[in-house]
Length: 210
Image (cartoon, rainbow, N blue to C red; front, top):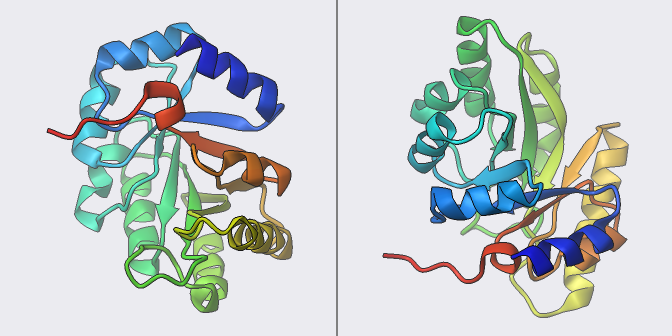
């Protein structure tokens, strides 16, 4: 793990490294923590809240998986650092409602379905303008930027084109952050101007699903 993290740090410069820790034990997370990682990403609320409740309080937790409205309360009442997967007005409205209840402002990214894949979550590009406008009007949400997952393809040009389009959307809407790039394509994402990369396998190794 140390070698992988050291290599990533050399490559990413000022880009934020989020260690994707889904299915990983607290012990594995603490090993990465002891190596200086402070940003961790989780896909499932139930797993996330268990880890938030017993791991160091200075960890910056990123919710990167699909978030159901009935699970929003569980993470907003805790110190979620960034919800990266907001994809609808309904979800944004629920996050704002819970943020008001807890007297806090919640930072979010809007997830964009850049590949226009019907099997993936995320806001369509055609709906993005409406969702951004709605989020900017909410009192207790801080819209920081956009998130995307590259198309599932071996065609590097297609991946690069998608990342380039995301950078263009970030600029168009004058947003601060762009989260894109995972273990298989983070180098392309860095070349195309991402601010955050989400790395799981390269840090923790292949996941074993029970």
